[in-house]
Length: 320
Ligand SMILES: *Cc1c(COP(=O)(O)O)cnc(C)c1O
Image (cartoon, rainbow, N blue to C red; front, side, top):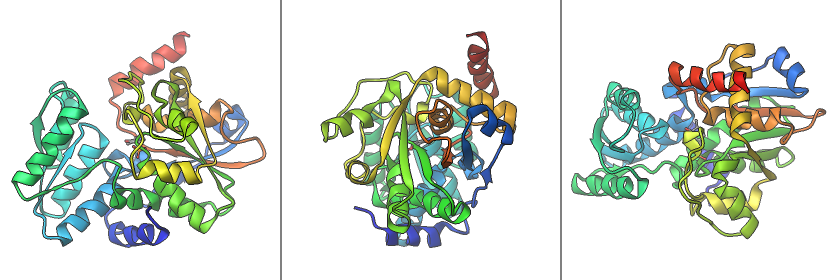
């Protein structure tokens, strides 16, 4: 299991590379939602999501070990983060994406300096390809969440929240593969065990909820949740034990609630948050995480959504 020392070491490694993101507050949202809620603005992080924290820590360690190439299997935020940090450190990256990856995402990876390789449509095809490319070319494969360096890097979000919000009662965190929440749990439960950490998952991608219920890693089938960063089929071998031992609660949010939270945040704070980044706020908005007498910090984990998609989603919210 990752330890607080790993998170502290990650912080010293990535400090000069990442942004210390602000905590945002909106009176208007606090009134509408009836909650003293604040947002930890990782949608303003470099590359548009917190993924750069874990990726930077893992790639820095790979470079210290002599690597001159890293690979990843992701057309989303992890792929962009690995491409960005590899270029920043002066090494090459190959990002394996599905054959149907959106041109905008591919262009973003290329703009950061990553080489794009197409392979299949499922992660079961992409991951082995990314691993074998790394193997053939003496590079290092960088996984999206189930790795100690990644968990420790994501945990730096937790250290920052505790410093920025010493009166925090509850931290609400989106859960995909569980890298972000297991990192935050590692930091928060070592430093401030009294602060509650609550996970938020889309009801359509409830693999962690099911796994917690059964006490063992449980997979779900393919899901179409709009929160595309949370579509992982099961929690990780390293992340699940942390979540299972330390988590204070997990809540499920509906698609419509995610859209409404995106809309409220755009209208009232003028911030653009992607669907995955609105899952923790949606849990607060719907009253499922946090109560009226608590100081709540919801992590807005990413902001990578194109405007056309954003407009389509928000229009759904308006017409219903
Ligand atoms: C990856 C991602 C998540 C989920 O993180 P995990 O570490 O996989 O649980 C949440 N939000 C955004 C924006 C992401 O990119």
